[in-house]
Image 1 (cartoon, helix red, strand yellow):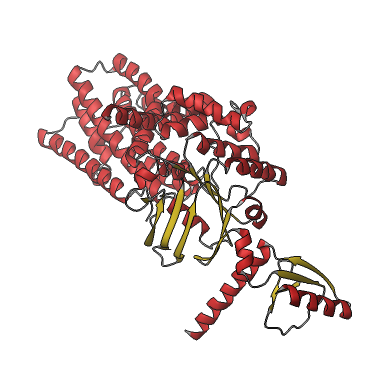
Image 2 (cartoon, each protein chain N blue to C red; image 1 turned 135 degrees about the vertical axis):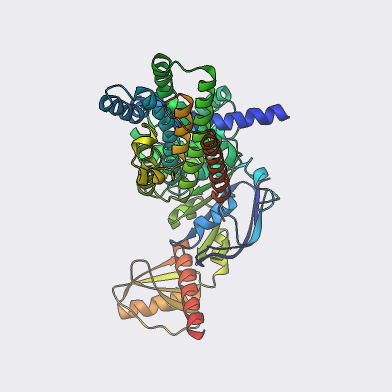
Length: 307
Length: 251
């Protein structure tokens, strides 16, 4: 069974910037682990450490029980990564891309050719197999890279922002693919798209300023947050003063109130009486993300003010 | 077990050769012309200006230039693959070691140099008629210059963060190691106060060894020994720095 166990992973770069701050979590079995967070939250640093590209400053992680600081070579036998902004080399064809990558993994040329064809076929890339990568669409190029790492037989795959820059159809195609692959692989992906994490992930890690603010399934994240409902107020702003409700600025700039079921109906009735336009929903990952990240920013600012 | 390991390493080395030279030349044949152009164009100019008198020195210079070009090529190719395609990141997380990746990339540059080396060897056979000893000295010097340039190229590739920066280094290395130093001509052509500046470049010492061995330049036995010591020492130093400073798994 595949597993990743992080124990207090921290990373401070040489110029003093703290990219990871004591990150700990455990993920076992096949499936998708999505790490979400803003730019600079520490997602890529985390994934690069787990993929043995970068040394942590403190803490460690066990990949399938093997310590990544002590035995990176052993880990590299069963992991593979598509880094952020990775591109299929322009002057190669998809087949040549996969063949050369397999050879980097120590596989012989003839065997690599067979495996490359199989892997590209599995991802429905047989028509593009001998075209130059530079002539392929963005989505197809990304699929070539996914085919490349899948061909290796690695059971733990790291995908750093795999759908960034893809059009909605290519993104949806890649989602379908990842959804089928998650039965066979442990896939760790980072993303800015909350919808992507919501649709694909078995577990979600929310990161902000190098810290892991939350780590669980979407349902558990919902349960952990004391607010279950989100009321989006449109076009105006109202003052609320309840202990079991919190007001935040939503993504679209509208006021959003997070609260529990009883208070939600009470506030809704009050809004109807006032003639205010609003909508009420169960909280989404987006609401959880916004609440946790904003709370973290406020706490950080308060700490800074005190010091 | 050991054979399996060796085969694995060989496949890993071959992967770089495929990516960086064989597939590149197969898909873009114009690359072949590019590798011939630089060493041959300077040789042609030298031959025309000297009315054929410096053809021997020019051929010797082109051999050294071809080796320097390998390092220059390696520097920009590694930087391109690392920064623009993130290939190196993918390879770091694979079972390939830094040494196998480096050796593969180094060999891939040598594959690029094969066409020019074949042409120069034919020209050398026609115009220089080297003896076995002269040929061996030429091969030894070329090997040292090749290792030196590859190590230098590898070092610069690890400190560059984008391809523009790597082009900057390419220009500097190329000019300092093969255009300014007396590689295509004799050091005695440089007026004396400036002659000492030429000795800053290790390729000057390499050229002196080959030029004296082929009878174009007359130097003392002591100077010849100094030349060998300098190029070997500089190569070892650059190699050690490249290995120590280059980062496979970043810290």
